[in-house]
Amino acid sequence: MRPHALTPASIPTRRAFSERMAEYGAVDGEFVVFEADIGYSTFSHLFGDRWPRRYFNLGIAEGNMVSAAAGMAADGRTVVASSYGVFITMRALESVRTFVCYPDLNVKFLSSHGGFTPAIDGVTHQATEDIANMTTLPNMKVLVPADTWAAKKLFDVAIETPGPVFVRLMRDPILELYEESDAFRMGGSRVVLEGSDVTIATYGDIVFEAIGASAILAKEGIRAEVIDLYSVKPFDADTLIKSLDKTGALVVAENHQKRNGLGYELSNFCLKNKVVPFDNLGLEDTFAESGSYAKLLEKYGLSRQHIAAAARRLLGRA
Image 1 (spheres, helix red, strand yellow):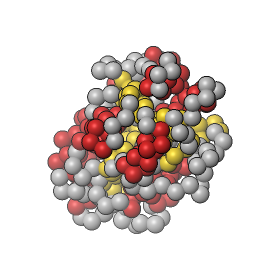
Image 2: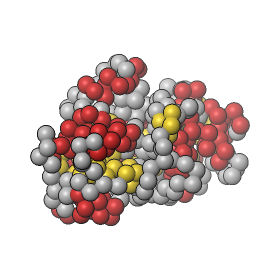
Image 3: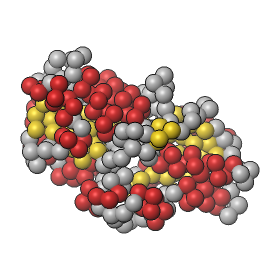
Image 4: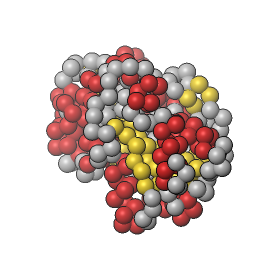
């Protein structure tokens, strides 16, 4: 596809998701939302403002929140449980596993502050292990929108998909790529730039760095194909294989630990299905730190310059 022009985002994906969630309250009168004391940060309060009798703030008790959400889902309701990624995927992990995933209940997770997008908030609020924890759980599906239209569309996808769904969202606005007419589905992806020399697969905020890397490479005569794998689990194997048939090389970049992230999943997939030169960019067995988002991208090897350099190495052009 030919990408839409990138424009500055005015709101973060966490707000866009919550705006759509508040609208959905009018569609399903049994739909409920649980929050763990930070609704004015996740913007889940937008649902509570409109539908206060279906909005439950359980305080700083994420495990209890997930357990209560599971109880509502067991009664046949569709439920959203909302908090920061570090709290959902760590403090509440046992409840997510045993009370939601094991019985395959219809609970959706609004997970804000994914990766080190909450740059200034520091390690305690940076979810850089969340994808590993959630993709490991049987029955859990994982979605990561890159911009606000994707966030709204993926809310609908999560609601329409039976069983647990984890949606990773960003703290701050970055850029807008998609439009209202763009379609998203569970297990889907979007080829945001077509190329023939190297495939760059990514998701969320790093989509924009990958697009920037493709522009750098284009000046050197290297055509990079950029795939937004917004459905991290299940991922779009068909589109990936089709791309690798053209390019024969793969760079995976993600705002997450390298270990047990999407890169590990795709390296395993390629070893079994399509062996190609491969590189995986992410956090190298380290925590991030507090600082500006741009400086963290640079320090931890996820800037467009680092992605372009990885592509050059694979092609023997370093």
